[in-house]
Length: 282
Image (cartoon, rainbow, N blue to C red):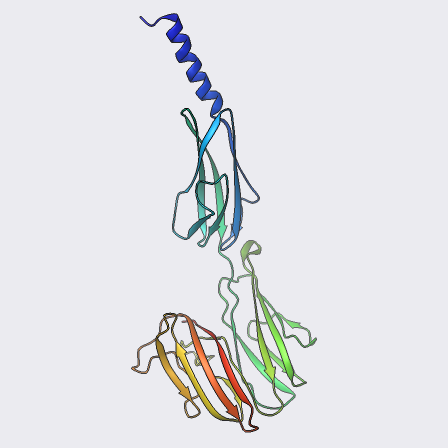
């Protein structure tokens, strides 16, 4: 038969555990966020000596927890859309564990991408823009950087009346305000010149199917394309001034980011040395 003293001790210990495992909460700014957003979480607990925090999500695919999963305050980045359960476990001393959960809804963000075609030498010059954005059901806004107004067309054309360097900006609008913005320089030349597009879509639809420098009166051209591992894909020159998205052996390259290294001269003796990236979308 348990003595009254032992029973009292056991009851005290149980009450102590219950008290120390109360008021375990998670604080965060939003419960609905966009993919790629950094979401801050802070844990709080009362009623005992805390020895450990532990953060867990029901899916680890595309989830990053910084600085680590055992800090009281963490920043979690969700790369993929979906509904996630974020759980914080709190360990007390001498023993006892309690937890709190928070449901986070992650909305797919838009990705803004565009290419340029139809460029020639001279002004005024009409330039065509090819929209390669994805996950943008709410539409687009273009700003061409020349105080000539904006456009909400998917694939607009715009007339530049002066030779200059412009910054063209595209905003792609996604659901729940999960928008994306991309800007790219554009050089309108009245004589010789060279600019590089940053995206192309070799899908056989006749629109933006090749990657090619926007070249005006070039004398020499050497351009090498590399994949993200640094493996050479193709060499371009003054006789072959485009890449169709295939290797020299005729194999279709996968969608993704590629890099170019270019050197060229124009008929006026100006030299160009450029490095940059290309987004291949299929």
